[in-house]
Image (cartoon, rainbow, N blue to C red; front, top):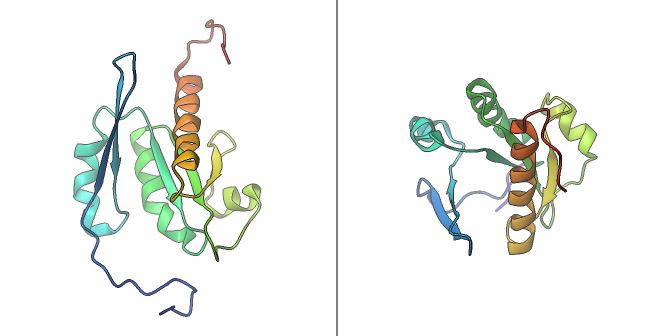
Length: 146
């Protein structure tokens, strides 16, 4: 079933969050928390954001307005974030500059395209986030190694 806005009618319940862990050979562990954007889950955001190095806001071009609460949250807390535009079958494609304007983002916030169903695509989103965080936090006199 599809609503007039082109979004499929939801037939399942949001459980509340997703959790993942990526362990690297060096001993570094990356913990991932997937949080729903619905207002009823906002009370959990503060607890999960403690110690976060950054965030990914997953954007659906059919519901761009749903991103504003997340963007406002991360901006107000000073948490570096990137926008990952979920490109899936049936989703409208827009120029990145048009998405930036629609979300009222400054030029420093990276916007990347992805398919959240594809492992390699999601890995590239995480790599983009880590690179952005490293650039944002690098002291001015540090030499860039890319």
